[in-house]
Length: 278
Picture (tube, rainbow, N blue to C red):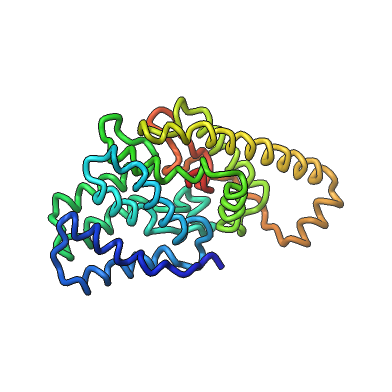
């Protein structure tokens, strides 16, 4: 199970940020919205894209807050960017797996006015969330840049934490056959590392080098694992034993798109969205 208990300060933090952007409903009503978001982030199919990721994104936004025009708008966008999530095979092979920022944006535009946030501000939150869809934040939108960078910040964590991140991403897609997963993840990471810059905002520039080191190390690991898997598959007896033991389903051709893992100039996710993002 990927569920961990939400820290006690989390819902009060949502209330503070919501009030800061104009929410004027009774505190109990604002808390209910925050609790609903916590419940969404706590769904049992989440391992990486779970409460800890939300907490990490909020902490990263705090680090970048000096660069933003309205840090509380960015914080609330952080709450909604991954509130909607699905990793089942149907969604994954249909290039709709993982966080669904478009659905999150619609949810923000619907829920925030209900607690008194001005519609214009709610629409601004939704617009920021939508830009996470391809991590292609506008070059003139510092708030969108901060949100995108905060979401990708896990890529720059220390190696031990990155190893845990890799395992948690795989756990979210444990139902995907090994070869399909490896090829998809390799495609995503190769596109990501090919970008001229992974992070957009000036203060996040310090994350660039460690992120590239982590990604490069993972690419080497995945490449070796895929080569080993393919070499084993050449032996019909080994393949038959492995397939029956693991219950591997027939391999299907993966859809070549991963909408939240692309920048404005190239598609990052020419495969299901298996977690190139943080």
